[in-house]
Image 1 (spheres, rainbow, N blue to C red):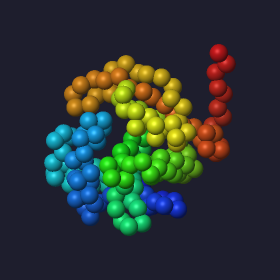
Image 2: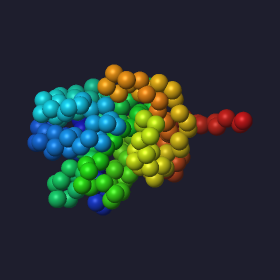
Image 3: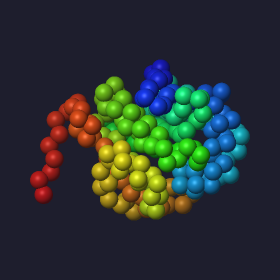
Length: 189
């Protein structure tokens, strides 16, 4: 699939490429990004190159992962998000925000925009969010974006060779006022 570009009043969401390697490398020097996400630690220049020049383009090409850099009108990188396809109609979203741009709602806005795109253009009926238990900033973004936190999964995230418990939540098309591709019949107790 060819990469798409999404816009909001404040943001440009587009795939990343070689021109973004330095910005990705700089952002991933943040100890919080290295602690709470699965990016390598230490994060080296070759990791950024592999991400921007191979991983992100390959994910779009084979339809397995749709990565968006979150850019401000100035061209500054404000964050990153990706939707990885986990099964038919189910994508898992992951994201991080650049330290100096946190607290402005950019990542929340980008998450809602990308989820709306996945629901309306990719036939996704469930976007899942997972974060290691204790990652309160990630949970706050997910909740502000409308995700329902469904619980805790034991030993469900492998971060740098260590299994950790994680929170899991979901966003459905109906949460954004959109139709699903298939009927949904919620459980009744």
